[in-house]
Image (cartoon, rainbow, N blue to C red):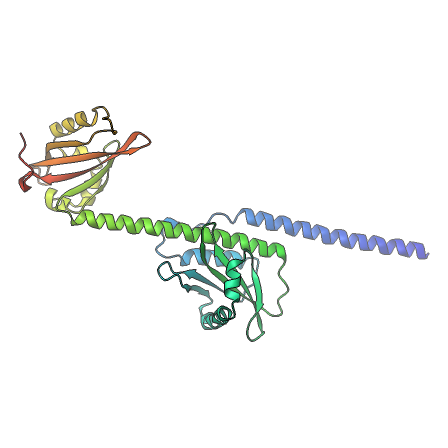
Length: 311
């Protein structure tokens, strides 16, 4: 009888362990499946003017599996290299988070968390919350710090969930880095456009088929048309007299010189908005990529500005 009870007890223990292992395996599978979906951000990073949307999307993903009472992101200011509180949710916890982070900076825990490639867990000054710190870092540099507040009574978060948090924050850091690169590209592009608009001539760029990709604001004075009006005409051909277009095509088809495709300099007739033909000088250089012409950059100059007269 005792042997039978012992066997039943062992069977119950085995069933209990088996159920626990099944739950653990199911949880692990769910975590891995979630991790596989966290690599891509839905936000169009190249269209953002500031990174808060990336941080909000990151927070939404994190709150799906860790019940933080509050979350905050500190990002590195590119000019001063200081850590700046960029997003706090909910915002009414901002002063508390700033107070706690200042304390962590003073006692060196903040800098310790920056050097780690994992989350750091500490108690708040009041002892009522637990803080989770995790650096936002790419392979090239540190982009910021994530701070999350958990209740003191909240159960310990498993290592698998913390690994999932690391994956999300790694993707967030990469998205922030992409945003910064796009921002620099936009700033440089804007700077070059402003320089082009400052010049007294009309600057333009086309693709290899002559489709206009950019034209400066001076087209308004020289051609009587707004840049967007010219862009609607699509091709450079549409603003040149037919004979001038044929002449330009013949020049563009000339063979490569010793340093690549030669530039073009022609006296041509450009069509003004009122239909009159304006004599201008056209200078163009090819945009070469991998040995092939990917487009043309050029300038239109008024002949009466000392550039000579057409034949």
